Image (cartoon, rainbow, N blue to C red; front, side, top):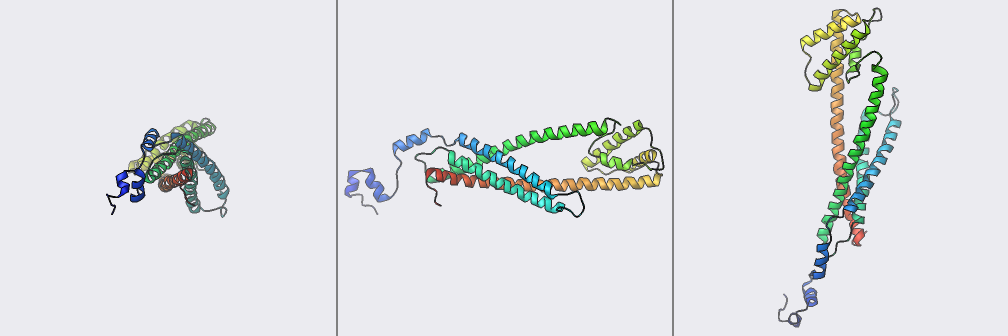
Length: 298
């Protein structure tokens, strides 16, 4: 217990109170300085976010080169598809941890010093700086990658359409490969006119896309019509045409299902990498802020 009748209390000095109670009271000057300081250093956040986004692009380019070197179109050569998918997911998480940690560290180390702020509040602000740097880097990376990928895909698609589709007027939709299987001609017969084949390809492409994109089953009328078109353009008898239609539909469904599963796996890996990146950036920012203030202990 503190003796309220002691000479120290009679003097009323603030130093005596601090010495006996053990609580440091903030001075009026410190409170004024804290009120003038901003809780968020946007310059540090932007700097950390840009650094994180740039490092992410570098590591993605490096990973793409390693991945292309590891896969091979030849049988019994290169790594398997399952191994590649798992390795790509793990590498995506590693990229997120490394890039986000560096960006968060810079955001914490480059921010201004907060005067007269409690250590718990400093820790929270550093964590927030790391999280905001990660968020800025994520949005920036998505914007850059989306625009770049869109330009690449549009340019490649235009080139392919000009090379493959313009001469014969053939469709180049996502189901064009399955339409090719349907309209594969019998070598012993003569194909129909090229214009009629192009019209049939376009119609069948739209039919496959509409059914598979919505998950609808091909009706009996669809099967019958597809078999008739295939028989007319390939020289197959009706029974063989119906058999080919059933086989190609199963192949198309299998391809769509594989794409769906691959998309789901990628979404899960991406979610895990984003969460790890947010945690790494926040943790690294507290270390950078501690080193900035000289309170971090190795």
